[in-house]
Amino acid sequence: QVVLEESGGDSVQSGGSLRLSCVAHGGAGWTACMGWFRQVQGKEREGVATIDPDSVARYVDSVKGRFTISRDITKNTLYLEMNSLRPEDTAVYYCAATSSRACPISLNWFGFWGQGTQVTVSS
Image 1 (cartoon, rainbow, N blue to C red):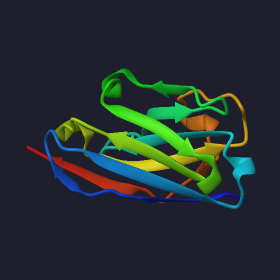
Image 2 (cartoon, rainbow, N blue to C red; image 1 turned 90 degrees about the vertical axis):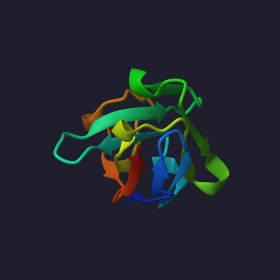
Image 3 (spheres, rainbow, N blue to C red; image 1 turned 180 degrees about the vertical axis):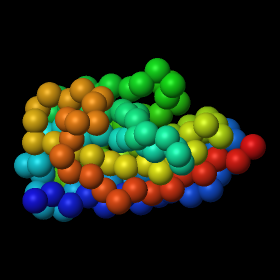
């Protein structure tokens, strides 16, 4: 029974940076695989990045080199460092978790979701 809580979303100018956080309540046992997803208004939710139990990160092409996913296991917290933000990054960002060790960037792989945090990038 994992509950995820995101924070850090804000309005920022193009080229700026933000750091999102996600605290997993309910124990680290449910955070073997965690990820970030986002949903642009009017569009389907899409993957951003995941990190597996061995701390191997995966990213979609659109954010490679700009975003960094990491985790602090002792704090049950997942992070997403976002740099060089663009207007097209504007979306509600969700953190997600699964008990599986495998960690593909796939919506249906994750059973636990946060409520989302709004990121707005203006030009």
